[in-house]
Every structure is written in C-alpha cells, then in structure tokens.
Image (cartoon, rainbow, N blue to C red):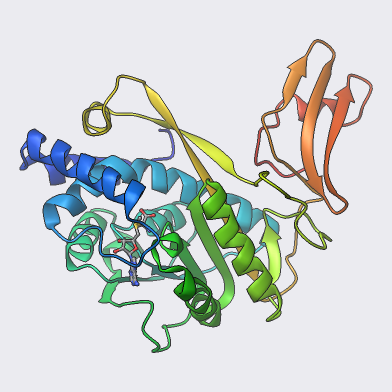
Length: 320
Ligand SMILES: C[S@@+](CC[C@H](N)C(=O)[O-])C[C@H]1O[C@@H](n2cnc3c(N)ncnc32)[C@H](O)[C@@H]1O
C-alpha cells in the first residue's frame, strides 16, 4: 500500500492494540452484514466505539484507496488545488486522509452523525499532524435542513447510499451548495452506487454543475445503458490485521468504486476519453474500452498508432 499514510497505519495498529481480536472480528463481521443487508434505509449502522474501531481497521485501507484514486482523477481533470475541505459522513476520516495526501490543505471540517465514529476518526487524525490534527469534527445529521459550512472541496465517501432514497438528492444539493470549487461523490462500485451518482449528476447538472470526472470533455449524457455501469477498482494490499478481520488469506483485495466530480467552473483539463475496462493486451495490439464525447466504444491500438506507447502503460480509470 505505497500510498497509505504510515501515520495512519501506525495509528490504526495502536487503536486496535488494546482491543480483543475476537471482539474486533465479531464487530467487523457484524458491520459487513449490516452494510450488506440494511444500508440505503437511513439506519444507524455503527454506534459503538468497538464497531467504529473495527470499521476503521477493516474498511479504511479500501475507502482511503478509492477516495485517493477518485480525487487524483478529479484534481487532474479540474486543474484545481483546493485548500479547504468539508468531509460529509466522514466516518473515521478516510476521505480527509486521502485529500490531505494530495493537497496542501489548510482547513478540514468533518461532519458525522455518530459519536463513536467521530471519537475514533478524530483520535486517528491527531496522528496525522498539520491540517489533519487541527481538523474540526462536528456532530451533524446531513438530512437535517441547516446549511453546511462552505469549503473549496466538499467530499462524501460511501455515505449517500446509506440514506433513504428520497433523501439522497436533497442531501447532494446541500453538499453542492457548500462547495465553492468542487464536490466529489464516491460510492461503492455497484449498479446501485452508479445509479445514485447518475441521479446526482442529472440533478446537479440541471443546477449548473460541470462534470469534471470521470466523464470526458463534451459528453452530452451518460452512454451507460441497461445493466452496464461505470465503475473503477483499486487494489489494496491486506495487512495481517486486515486479513484477520475480513477473513481469508488473499494478499490483496480489489475495491470497486464509482465517483463523480462536479465543479463550479468549466473544468480546466477534462479528458478526451476515459479507459473504462482493463485493456485487452494481445501480441501487437491493445484493445481499449473508452468513453469519449461520442459515447462508449472500443479502440484497437497497434504498434503504428501514436497512442501505442501510452496504451502499453494505461489502466482502467485512466484519462486519455
Ligand atoms: C460507510 S461510512 C463511510 C465513512 C467514510 N466516509 C469512508 O469513506 O470510510 C458512512 C458514514 O456516513 C455516516 N452517515 C450516514 N448517514 C448520515 C447522516 N444522515 N448524517 C451524517 N452522517 C451520516 C455514517 O455514520 C458513517 O460514518
């Protein structure tokens, strides 16, 4: 996990060191079951500090990696370098850690409903120094109507899909209202996660938002139809603790995610096309599945093609 902050890894080890492994494993299983069966209904899924610690140890490596990958593409496409961050449904802070690893942040505000998540998230962040250590953690139910504090970058990671369906667009609008430069939505890489973001895209585009990523410049609409959906994946190395909490011996896991980056101004460097799937590499030819302004298509690159050198190093999710 080359990009995973060492301070966060050490703080996670320290967090769980005082807890019984059996209790952590039990809580991690209970959380995983709750997210599988009870999400999307606005229910409180994590309320105890032991559960928050188990969430942090079991999920933060993956949610951090997804947030970092999405944010990297969003920053590239927008050409922005926000200095203030509002993390909505911050949980134990993964998206803030990801932003801090990419940006010279001066101020971080984390909004989170659950006391236990705020307690664990703020404790972990004290290990991060700088803006992370100074982060303000506020108790907030995002479905309540009061306006949110403004920030240049507003992010939500894996929160929107937890809300009841009828609340999702109004919460997305409130996040957008708070965003001075960009709002970034990151959701599970499932058909439901994609459908949630497609609805957010339609709603906020109608209010003047520009899509910076993942969509290419000039895209008129989304070409995904039927059971096709746009999602990406990051590979996450599993530590010993991670394996114990999640079961199995695989040395890594692939975290699938969807994201949507919306900007106030026309994005400075939106891509011409984005690679949607792992390239198919055969002798002398590479087949890319691309999304460009005209929609979704495959392009076969051969050795004579000017794109050949780049295509050999390209991966799913990359901009072309
Ligand atoms: C799956 S966790 C994601 C946490 C973190 N963003 C991450 O990526 O690891 C979703 C978080 O959203 C919070 N949440 C859900 N509904 C909320 C609401 N209405 N207001 C504030 N926070 C909420 C939950 O308490 C939980 O901490």
